[in-house]
Image (cartoon, rainbow, N blue to C red; front, top):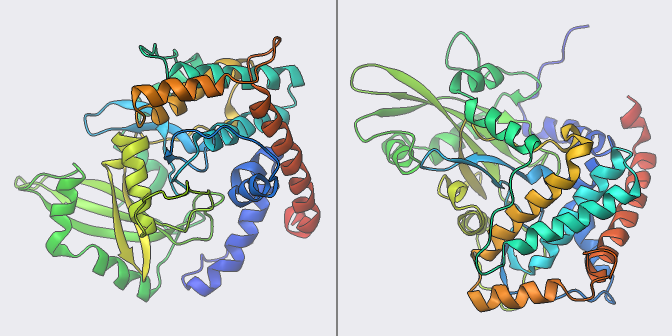
Amino acid sequence: MARRAPPSRPSDRAAILTRRRRRKMARSAHAYVRGNTERFYEWLQADTQRALPGGPSIWICGDCHVGNLGPVVDGDGRVGIVIRDLDQAVIGNPAHDLIRLGLSLASACRSANLPGAVSVRVVDLLLNGYVKAFKPRPTPVQAPGAIETLLKRAIDRTWKQLVRDHLSHTKPKIPHGPRFWPLSRLEQRAIADALPASSLGSLAEQLGIATPDETVTVADAAYWVKGCSSLGRPRYAVLLAISDPMGRSRLAMLDIKDAPPAAAPRSEGASMPRDNAERVVTAAQALSPGLGNRMRALRMLDRPMVLRELAPEDLKIESDHLPPLAMNAIAAYLGWVLGESHARQMSADERKQWRGRLRQSRSTRVDTPSWLWQAIVDALASHERGYLQHCRRHISIIES
């Protein structure tokens, strides 16, 4: 059977992408948790009786699940695990990030059919790793073997591998297929207007991918079919050709992604950029500075978009591939990563006070305070119901 040609008109994409998103979310309860940020906050806001500790008003990820953390390279070439997706970031309560990451880890354990005792210990260690970041002289949590392996793979990844993964082998072109679709004429013009030749070199210099004496041009662009919760929103891959005065050339890639309104609740009186792309970039500079410095806000197709340089080292943590026996150590380490991103925004007094609130209502048998444990258990039950309802509602798509 001949493969169906990828759609070029935006109006033809919507139904295809909606089906793909629903099918992705039906793969497991954890995939559903990852792909449905809105349900998490609907559940959180519907339970008006739930008492959560109020942390300092800081930038939070807003969608802190395992897949939104991963290796990212900074401007100095250092690779580290950071929060890598900031679409939902707001100035809000840091407890929301902690609950969402705990829900993500617990649902990953359940999807892997691990005993309930593993989930209990995973949440304990998540909190322990998180709290360590707020000590006066914090000692980093050591990355477990599974994370070290991922970091090594990221560090060893080269442009040759990126080209192999995404580009044509014969010429600097993005091949159309399941992941990349052709652009409409309107989209071609929009990208040309957003990245004019007169200022493209300057942008490449700011992102650290070109020098003043190099020539930068757009070699190709395509619609990028990527993500889960964001699948269906405009997203584009742009291939840049960079030539030096000696005639040598190399490639770079840009990721241009729609910046939607955030579902995460913001702190009362919080002052944030009104433009959603500016909000995402500002949040990235606070939570993951190495990544934030490689991002820019722009306006394209009459909507806010975030431009990001795509480096070979940039990967994400695939929760389906995490070794079950390493979940405890992974939880502690990811807790530390989240805590560090929060702690750097707080004063010494705020860190001390927040650390004390996190330890309130602790059991004598486990480290997790009752408010956090109960929130994760209730969220897990709510999302399990939602997952089964999703599968029932879209059974024809799932089985096709």
